[in-house]
Length: 177
Figure: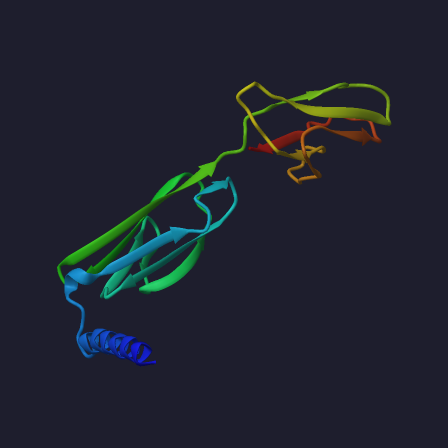
């Protein structure tokens, strides 16, 4: 029983001493600490990710490019249009601490569109497939069968469409790796 009490007493003194040492003192300028992270470092074109940061003992905090002055702790959702390196800068007096991270934006895969039939009487069933080279890996294709800019279907790879009326139609697609 006496052994347990001694350990508890020593622990209490160590914790109390550590807490007392920090009471009422401001950290020196060179004690600025920063953390900077993103929920996703790689996104597809048009997608978003969140930046999160914390800068302890900083007088000012900024994120570049394009974001500017921010609170010392926070998060922001971004949708970059190209791969970008973001830099968090925390300042306290003359002391500056930085942290950087890169967000990679993957463009839609450049894939050629093939069709099993390009003309015929209505109703015309056309089977579409992307022509892939051995270096392209995609997992989703966004099909615009009417060529009007609206996504008509999201498929794994290949799909078909029945055209009910005669006329010239120019279907398009976007592919995501």
